[in-house]
Length: 168
Image (tube, rainbow, N blue to C red; front, side, top):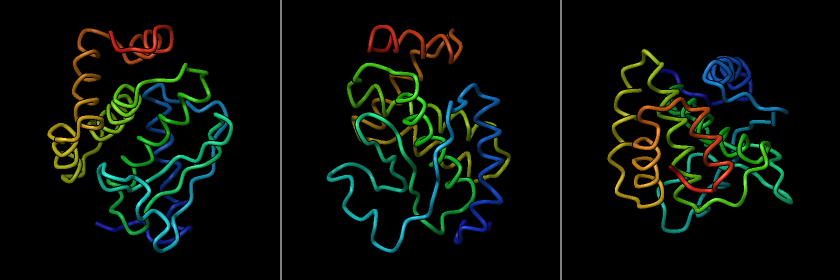
């Protein structure tokens, strides 16, 4: 499995990830720049949470870009971009301020849905890691979002959260 180590590799692979997200209904109104982090840039950006592989930059509640950790295998890169793209999507669709577990749960759900569509064997392992994460915000949020999706389409779930600020 090749990783995404350079800007040229990112530029070749990113359109595939974005096309998959568009097919899932996660179409950004305005695409944001995705770039690879410089060495040490993402270290310590998450405090006590899980390891940080990507971050969405937000200024005045407007998502301005995504930075991802370099060298990740394509499937991990794609799931990270999917997760961060949902943060962007939420900002672009003027959601109210969400509890962290709701927002991160939706982002992890988006990553999981993207991974479900991938044929790479690592996708299954990454999905398992998401589903079994002991972190209350990321893992707990994902499990709550996954349960809320049961019997619904993703668009219906997102409209509910946008309107009420909580999962159904």
